[in-house]
Image (tube, rainbow, N blue to C red):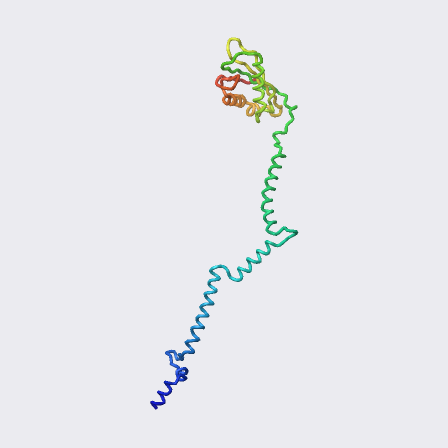
Length: 236
């Protein structure tokens, strides 16, 4: 019997058929050892491969979607015009249309307050007063220059321009450099009280004149009016 066991042990074919019982009741051998690593290793590689695709965002579905989007954007609509070109053109065109529309509206807009009939302005309103001129020699034509300056001032006023009629400079006083003036406005009869109390009140007309005087350039003005010397009163 011992000889038989030695013979089987020394026989190579006997080693290939050896099976060792395991604790779980299975049989461990070279065939099991060869199959187990290959199977487990294959599963590990497949799982890792799927995780890599998910991590990198380069899965088959993502690649197909990118290719489909690329093809759709580069699709020729007509001639050599592609879809992405039309999208860019629309994005650029929208703000251009908005800007053009705003410019047209601004150019064609008419304020209702700018529409009026000057023939209805028949009631005169007068403002008289005086002011003092610094370093002024009473040359010929000086009165006309001052008169033109006052007329331009009130005609260019957004609030008072439509009601202004004329400015008048009285003959200069020989003993001083004080100049007397008169401003004439005309008002519509249906708005007399409102205009006299607010728009054409003495305070409003006086403030427009005074603001102009403070904005003078004393060095370049040929007829510099001293702002604090301005006096004004109103009468109907």
